[in-house]
Amino acid sequence: MYTHDKQFIKAGKPFNETDKAIVLIHGRGGHAEDMISLGRFLKLGNMAIYAPQATNNSWYPYSFMASEQDNQPALDSAIATIGEAVEELKANGIQEEQIYFLGFSQGACLTLEYTARHAKKYGGIIAFTGGLIGEQLIRQRYQGDFQNTPVLITSSDPDPHVPVSRVTETVSLLEELGGQITLQLYKNKAHSISREELDLANRLL
Image (cartoon, rainbow, N blue to C red; front, top):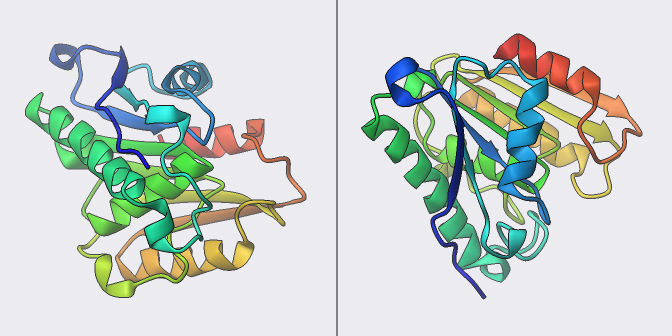
């Protein structure tokens, strides 16, 4: 089993020209560069962009609904990696309420897991096809208050990797933490990011 080397691909505005940033989190088998290139379709022109790269191109080895010990230590290391990206952004003068997160698939699950464990006022959270991680959700590990942070969650009904039941469970838990949730389910959508999802994301951004 593996842990993650700290590796961030950076793009967008330099810190002396912006007070906003986004953390882009790739899916299983993906690359940080894929997420940077996705940024061409998103309104990120005034942001610093950080895209962490997973060791072995995967944030954790098994399904996001596998038993937790199966995905360790990679999962804890992945959550810590996102935390390091946030700390680096803060050290460069970006306030948490100006930090945005966007992830796809495995990266969407990690986006939701990190932010729900550290709920506070962020710029916004975008999860393309994902849910909170674990065989069952352990409510007490999710702490803080999103203070109406906008959260966009999209998924397919059905999706081969992400059950709709976990998506709806995730939405209700994030609402308990004070998130302002927009949920969009698509009938039989491919496991990819559609133009319509990008348009919804751009509204949030």
